[in-house]
Amino acid sequence: MKKLLTMLCMLTCLLGLTACGGKTLTQEEKDRGEDAVALATDFMIPYMTYFFDDAMAEQYQDSYNVDELKYITEQQLNYALYVFSTQYGLNYGIDAVNVEGNAILNGIVSFNSAYDALGDIDTSKNLTGTYEYSNDGKTIVVTVPLTGSQTNKKGELITAEAEVIVSNDLFLTVESCSLNINRSMSELMGRAAMDTLMGMGTVFSILIFISLIIWAMGGIPKLQARMKERKEDKTSQAVDNTIAQIIEKEENENENDDCELAAVIAAAVAAYEGSAGTDGFVVRSIRKRR
Image (tube, rainbow, N blue to C red; front, top):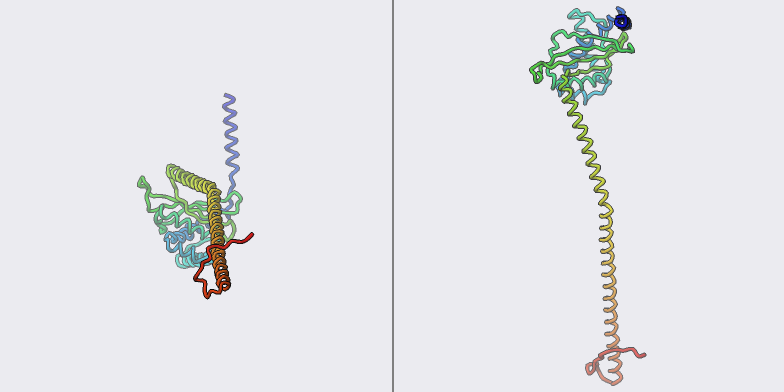
């Protein structure tokens, strides 16, 4: 019994320490958090839903850099802030909307890619969100639950969470904006399995391709040897043809020389015998005297 009481006391102390460890926000921090929520629900999320349209998302990504995206977004959202404040009498704790260009660029990609699964979002209704400060206290993370028009296999409307991160200062600059689909455990497991299969398939395809390259490289020496043999055969054949041509040429030259020598001898014999021509005799052969 004493051990049980001791364990209960220790558990109570631990729970008490955990509760005391939570940071208590000041009124200024609470107000800044509420302003961050209003910035996300009234300005950022309705603005980012325009990029559900593929043509607009593609145009902004291809036509503008991050600095231009920053300028365009701030101009449009500050005009909306002016209209809400003057015409509708809404009060915000910010004087201007400040964003980072990279946050808009990444937000365009995130919102556009989520549209096919989520569908349209009714932003005419008041969106609600929650906020929390990061561990280092430098940013405020705003989470806004959203419901799309598409349904899952069970016929339920697909939900998502928009996350907007703003700086914890007087400017409340938007540093990040994304839209994440809420998926069931079975969908996450199926997606993980597909990613695993695709990764393994890619790895095996690369390994097979490398194996084919190695196998092909093994046949290169044989191909080089065959090409060398063919080259040697062609060279030998060319040499043989050249030698044959030289021999034939020499034989022709020798034959021509013999004919010329026979004609000279015949003319000399005819002159010796006082004959007018060489028709009466024929030189059969010529032999050198040793």
